[in-house]
Length: 309
Length: 272
Image (cartoon, rainbow over all chains, first blue to last red; front, side, top):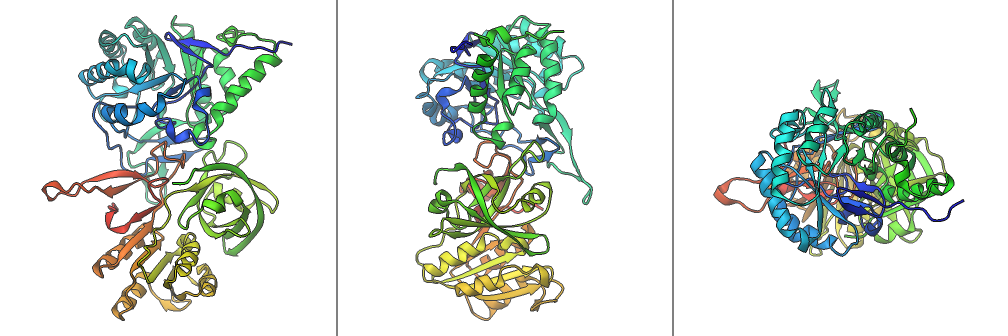
């Protein structure tokens, strides 16, 4: 038996204490979770998606529960980048955990301006990297439109690449015919890592009123229900690209996280599970340590992509 | 606001007080110390992935001395069904207390409390606190029919004057609780504050009547909720913003969970 294990991983040049990150939109701006989680223990914190200007978001109902999952159509409600810099990032500076900012925009110009602005303050405010959201299903413009077309993906990622030296993680949508082509386009355009999957587009209908249950009509499906889809796509992309992959989709316990790592993810993001169990991130980190010790594995990196086919 | 706790609490008692309506008593001293009338707890009802999300339920009564809280709820779906099946002695995983709570102004003397259906849930604790602060309290309860009138005696025991309206006239006044409110105002009993909880359309009407009579009115809102701690932005409602340039009413989406669940009635935008 070994008694010392290594959970450290490196993603896009960002050094993480462990592979557990928080999925954008499920962990607020970090502070919301401090009653439950010591933020110092997390691998990285990915913040609620930010846009150049504040965004009101979609009208309610914004969420509906579905079997072992939920649909959401928040619509990227956020405070805008200036408030983020002034009011949200200073709080996170006191923690010894990389902060990654998830960025969105309606146009290429907006993504670029947002990237530049965050680049300017990155040293002072402790921005470790950017996660580029080209996969949000709940906004009319931009969002998923970029991530469903390989050319558009290449165009947006290469434009952002030129605007910053910050590590770039590109977040992919599962709502495509072949995710491998999109993944390759992002890699060729200069992405340092890929995170997948964002939510699957879905809907729910009220049979009494015959209206959609979400005001936005459609929403993004997340939670345990999507895990098999996410795993399959992570494994597909793992066989296609050379950059690290961050696995996302329905992880609620350590076994789920390990499945993603074995299928090729170097790190994972925890999303919907934060809503159910606010301490889930810490429990999964502790579970990983235990698994490594019990299975006599010294370094979690040995596990990445170790699937036996 | 108080810190939100994530704890396991023991079920001390459980009773079906009306068809499909349950009252459970929980031992939760750390919650009662901080809890305010109008706040809620967020309960994990299942032990697996279905249903996945917690259920937000109002705190019905707070017994600080014994360290107990009461939850009154109606079975409406899978989550509340599982909760109703829990037994005395079981543990519940809860988050709480959550939310801002009702704001009873120190200068208030007369308070009107209005509950529609299961909307009475957060109002018993409020009634108790209002009376403790020296107010004269009147309570209006509205329900579909006699069997669904909940808590009438409990409010009365606290010292409030209680009136009841049933839609089908099977008990007391036949009609809507808002009719009762209008009548009482017309008779000249003017509250300094009105507090209400119930279905959205009823709340909208109560706010209209209150504002016509120039009475401050606070309402407890409900919305589909995920995290319950202000992170996911799922449970929003439309609230007027103070900036009134060009006479246009502007709004923003506020979180029912931590910005509410209690809002000034005059600030809520009621979309149909």
